[in-house]
Length: 330
Figure 1 (cartoon, rainbow, N blue to C red):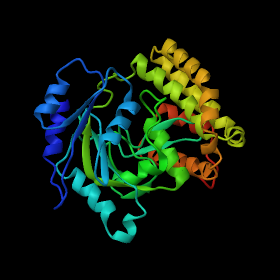
Figure 2: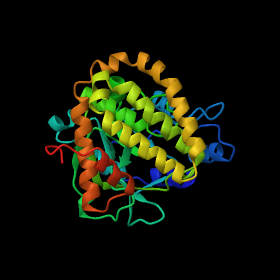
Figure 3: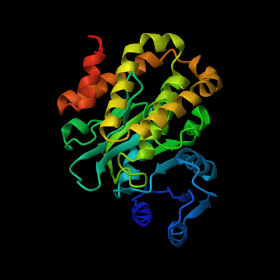
């Protein structure tokens, strides 16, 4: 996978005057990834073991140079115009560029390139998230440029100043939902980005951990609770208690139905153990959370809009039955 990704990076049609510095962070791999990266002329950061996605990405950001930083997973292939399309969209006109801090493109399913893998991320009031359009047929619904606070770190570009303003990825999140955490901080600081559908990438998805693996269920369960701990002030927790209970109970039901009851239980226990610690450490973030309720409602309405326009997933159908959108949000 890494070799294919690096080939697609070096095949990028870059704007005049733009050059690439490619940093590969090796998170304790046991195959020939390091040799593959060095043969491709990349700088390699070798970590002593698997330190998790967030820590690895942060080490790469720290080692990078240049005004723009692209984060790309190893199970991705970029179309030749991916980077040029993103840079063009956020780089001009100059007065607009100052308002845009990142850009993310349309990601298609690598195995069936007529299907959407994701068109950016969204989170509901209950703390559960969805890659917008996941599993749906590609089409006009996903072809509109739009502003967003939620990049998908699967494949996106960021201004260096973005990380200077909001910080790096949350290192207590070993894997999964670290980009949702990043998006919530972007929303609270009012640092918008752009979804650019003409910038296309292809994603294999869960190629390392595996779809519905025990580890991914455990991480997702834990990190949903930690998002609530980190970002929701007490008054918002009470206001959104119904959707929080709906989202978390439905997630537990879904995990158990997939044969992952023990993984869900471990993740829930880990989330509870880390809840108070992260809540204390993030008090200053919650004090700036006036915008959060509006952002959550807007993102939830976007989830409902795409679900209604395509087909309802069982999870989201039941979520909106148990925690209906207010009329003005729908």
